[in-house]
Length: 111
Image (cartoon, rainbow, N blue to C red; front, side, top):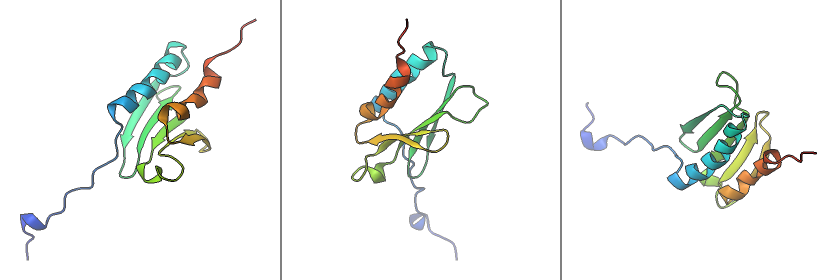
């Protein structure tokens, strides 16, 4: 028995970043690239989440991952920043607020 074209289910769509979200992430990313701290990134759209991975060098494991999980939006917030050890550094409903975890790393007091 052959399947009719009408019985074929479409492939599930992956979760991806929207343009405004990427703009927000790339603003922070660009700052650290300018300081020479970050060198590369990767964007992945998975079935249940979108991931923006940040690398010190392209051949390493990511230092950080900014993750969007829409299924968690009502509970803990759709956005989180995860460190290289898997620890959740910050999570919330507002991407800009979540990315403020990098503010501590962004500014240094100079004597």
